[in-house]
Amino acid sequence: MIQIPNVITPNDDGTNDVFAVTINGAKEVMCVIVNRWGNSVFEYAEQISTNPITLKLWDANLNDGEGVTEGVYFYRMEVKDMYDKTHELKGFFHVFK
Image (cartoon, rainbow, N blue to C red; front, side, top):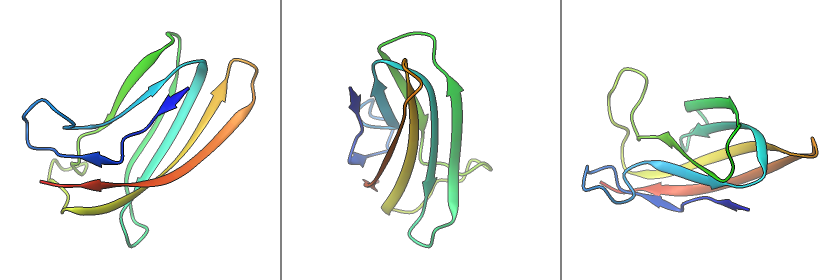
């Protein structure tokens, strides 16, 4: 089971402030988020030891701490399950401020 949001609102109100993914049955996760021009704005990779887990991946900030603009962002995830099968997930989500 994987739950991926389609909207985040990074306004510090405690609701949907980050791109958070809930995963059950995974042992490894890799995620890349790009903007509409294909430029990478976030990369993440981790071994998972607890299931289910909610990974708070991206807070809509660049590496220098500057917030990104509102708009559509695209993700590509690779999730390796407990049987060493890799699942590729692709999609998009909106950032609203």
